[in-house]
Length: 151
Image (cartoon, rainbow, N blue to C red; front, side):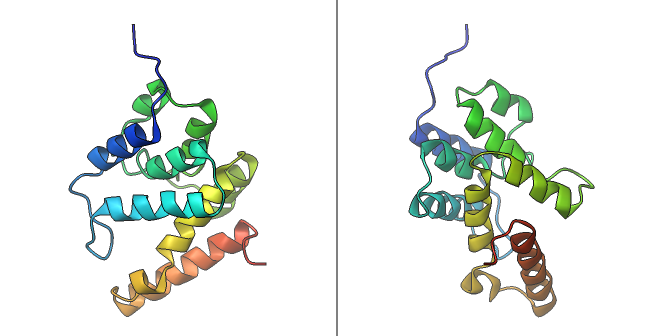
């Protein structure tokens, strides 16, 4: 019988770090730094433990670092799982549909807001080439607008 003891935040962090081990972000930094920054951003914005857990896992399914089945079977709250699935982009999905799903999922907006804030950090973008920096800056601004985070 599977262990049904709920995963602690430390367990979730360890699973996320292991799943993304060896991965780097666009700037060549260890991917776990992004996960930590998003989790901390959620905490600073008043997020609860379920949202912080989702922040650690927010890219795991999308990046194929963890299979969706792992998420579904993990001893996590339904809310945490729903947030992770809400912020997981789907192939060919229009940004408007992605934003609508985030807005319709309780707790997901705060996680995406922290993710966008770290992605759009000027210090993080500064190390990228100009075309990439411009493209990403526009992409993040558009998503912020779709999510109603610009005012």
